[in-house]
Image (cartoon, rainbow, N blue to C red; front, side, top):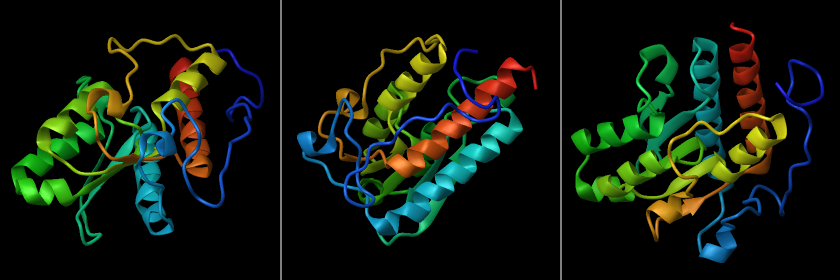
Length: 201
């Protein structure tokens, strides 16, 4: 695998910051699209997403985790990626939360809920989110960052889907993220997964 640095750690890259814990500039900068920042009180949900992503890597799955939270801040459901261990490429945690939400929540409850996730939704999950009428999406790392990491490491893009942002798929969807310091943790998990996968672990 391409890249430099310690074999067990992703090559270092400077993470851009704004004041405190807010969003990072990217190809769909939140201030440009009129959406909000990530509040301090939301960070525990994102950290839980990263814990779930780490559990996924330990199990041999892609490093993604997501949490569904209601309007009062209660965690309703959570899941991690299960693509590799099930052989089902649709077993993304964001998609699983959609399935749970449409079964257990009213349309009003879905609209008031927030999905926190370690990585921005792929087009499949964004479309499902939109069809289910779920509310705000908050992500620790963006799709653009994931593409940049792959390019940096010399990893080919294998997804059959176009690299669209959530708002490209669901116009008007409220989103917030990425969070630079948490995005770096996601980057480390991505690197660990690819190192283990390339080593046949």
